[in-house]
Length: 277
Image (cartoon, rainbow, N blue to C red):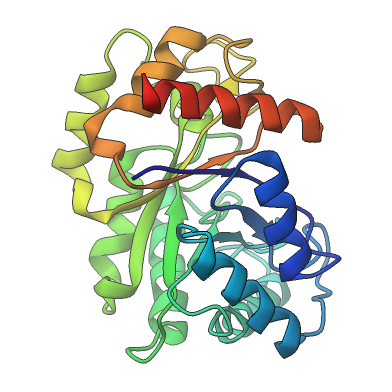
């Protein structure tokens, strides 16, 4: 089974997102838990969620991949930013339990000059405070491109966080194809080698989701600029090889490409054609 979808606006609610996903040909989707550039979250509507759960069940949706707002920085050097980030993160985890068993993806943070090791330590400390044995949501660390002082630019940095977290069964990784390419992992010429390295450092059992994006940049640029599938530096053939790689089988693939609805519909259809060849 394969699962493919794109990032959808949450403003109209879960049922609207599910119906939009179906119109575009998807069977999963991603959404921001709240304003991606702010802190406001949409009020929970339990009737809307129950209708969404019905649609998802009847259409055999895969796991949803919620996305934390960009304003979160768990390892900022500013105490007020860390406090806001931890409180928002904890609130999001509580809200995610309305759609049990889903994924909550976040950018680990930027160490803002403190050094990657310090950033890793702070991020893990927050996760140890927030994650609980009772939650059904799996929190996903996202692979990053390495802009500025981003933590998560290498598989080893993500492993460093994971090693320090107690609730290991509540933590995993979301692999972004654009980010790892921009971060220096050559998935065009050495996809198997990159996946083997991921398995050696992080473990494929900890891979839960794929952000499926081409890149506007050369490998190792550390810039993080997404492109439509096949129109970037990764290209159609390499993206297809990644989509069909057995290591990614059964994972939700989320498109975050610069597209309108029609563009997403075409990319989803192309992905499905690859799967059915």
